[in-house]
Amino acid sequence: MPEARIGVIGGSGLYRMAGLTDVEEVRLSTPFGDPSDALSAPLPVVRVDDLEAAFDAVSKAGGVIAKPIFSFPGGRRFHFIDPSGSELAVWSER
Image (tube, rainbow, N blue to C red):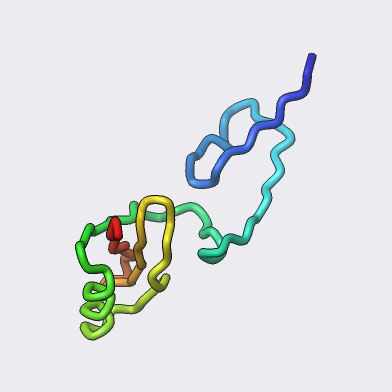
């Protein structure tokens, strides 16, 4: 029988399937920073028209910037930590 190799992205839970054997964890680095371990909560994403204005407003309000503005295939975004410790993302198509 031919050998099949399967890659599973973390956070999906698929790597804990019953009967799955010979599991290898591979840690990757990306241009956007190291991937986090399994998410403890969903990531709320807020859409805005002016990302820089939103970044400035969050910074001036004392928000902790977790990931500065970066580009990705869907546009650009940044992440910040709110006063309760939750991480949120702010996204713009431009």
